[in-house]
Length: 408
Image (cartoon, rainbow, N blue to C red; front, side):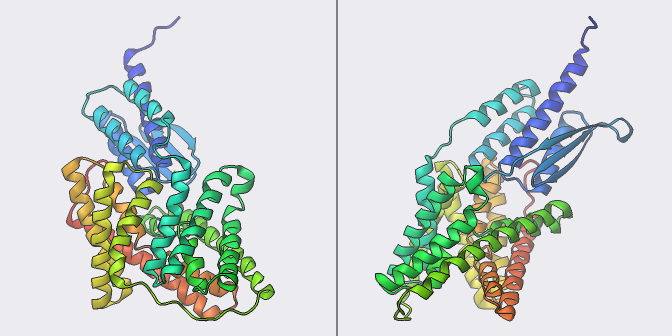
């Protein structure tokens, strides 16, 4: 038997570590440009030359000089954002880079991270859909009844998403099904229980499913020249929004069977309530994004800073550039926090940005198009895209002013 060259064994272990950490970062929700930059840096620290190509469903890794490359293809199922997993994987990468553990030990630790049980029970995640929906109703100008109904419908959406959508048969129709349930539920409550703002409640109940964050990440990837991944995310976001809007269009048909309502919008909650509600929204997104409980405070703080700066910017220069001001503040604050704590900047950035994302505009535009209101629909979709570009510009400027860590 030919003896194994120790240097070749070490190289094999380094490649295995690179592939394993690439898969974990991809499944944790890392965008293409950050994933590729991080893996290239890790490969260089391990003494390897690597070229990376990431899409939302695959990762292509080529190791070695161009003429002698070995290429590895990983098929990756897109997963939900998992900020705790991202932090743990970042810690393993740092320990391997500093030489505290070797690549083989790094692979073992990564596999332990993969099999760890979820921190939060599924029922709690489902309930957080309701908290996020109720919070959205306040920010959209709803009343107390709107808030309550939005929260209940949001919880229903959460249970459908968390428990039913995990089955492949149901997952393919879950978005449209949620649209039907929420739209019909809002209309039934309005007609038979108490008057509510039906459109506002429908939008709030579905707000967690609307892929505003996906659209923002897509524009970010396009801006950083990751064209394939960015275009795929745009198509994915559009597919989700159209599915939800189609479900809403079906659900609203129940209106033809119901008596006329009062057609009066309830009085909105006082604006000062938005700030306590913002804390609840931060708590909900801490759980939905699977962050550690200790991450709640930086998430809440960055969210408040981002919303405050966005409102000031909106008052001064309009909503599009106002969103950029909010994203700039979140990006600078998150990068400073990351440098101080040696944690990934994504932990406070993603929950903070989701409070600014243009999901409501895009959803309203698609609903208008389905309802054959072409001009309003185009205006809504274009407005959503413009806000997404504004958010990305703010984040890119933040990285220029306060550079990110070399890793995550």
